[in-house]
Length: 416
Image 1 (cartoon, rainbow, N blue to C red):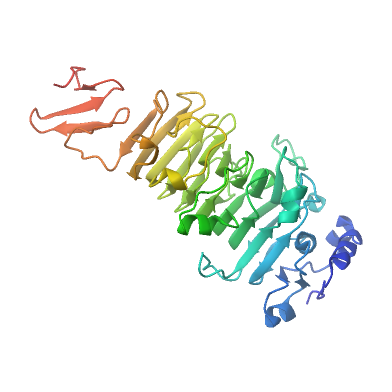
Image 2 (image 1 turned 180 degrees about the vertical axis):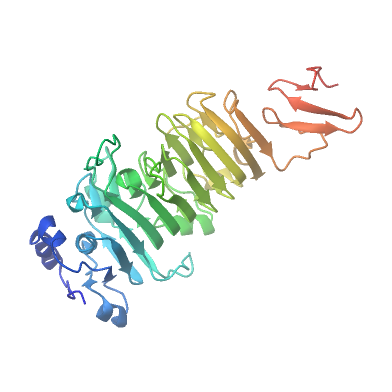
């Protein structure tokens, strides 16, 4: 059994972190497979079973210390309760830090206890970025609740690739920012080798109140982001994907940066400026299955280049009065920074009339996509067609295609 650490004060946590070098920890025999952590308000039973007990102040030091013990990988098991982030003291302005681990690769699973958690039933694990932490932040750069070191060991042999040493997966946790007034990121996969998320939420503290009581969210600061993807998963067996991940009340919900073969299933971005946004140079493929863009100011913004397949993408824009003001202003339709740089297929449904949004794409964008509005009939002429959308005219027994300016048949002849 791993020695049980009862950290009852932040001073004790700081001493523990400072008192052991990474090399000393890595040399310990029998590195634990599970590090159990309890919150200050966890149950007595959970505290008794825990290897680390937080105090409710600067809990980021305790969580980082627990990660340091998992030199061979394993599980960071968080008991139900509330954990408080008061500082971002590690590399890259990170609160909970996954270090270099002497260059030894490891996989760590960050796992909560209870999956059901919402506006009326605040159960499970809540990781709170406090008002004091937000106040201490600058307005530039980025602050990260979860992130890893940028340091990478060189690949062995003649391989030219480099990889990050930490592969990190998250399940059954909520991250809650005091507000979205500063450039804070929930889970930043920039320095993880691969990352899988399951039943994870990243919100502002008042997100549920804004949503369910129909109040307008405060305009978020640029740089507040729910989840930042890994840079790539082109590492053969590596796993990268999001299942049932929700983000809300931020500037950007999901920020993707060159993540090859990333798959999202049943994910929701709500009441953000941008629910979905891509950056980076060259991409391979990304797939969204039954995901939702709900009450965000703008539809997705596509920077860089790549290929996207989005199946049953649900757009909801019910009332502009409950959608945040974007610091960017501008239109609401999806757009490409460089039109024609993205390709693929999108099928979507649209609900609500906020911003008078009628089409998915802004003028000039999406020209290399097959875009299908699932609300449209296949046999009658849509009033607001997407580029290359088709319908079958029963009177003439012809299929017509919208070329961006008019409906034409297979010979290019305009429809009546």
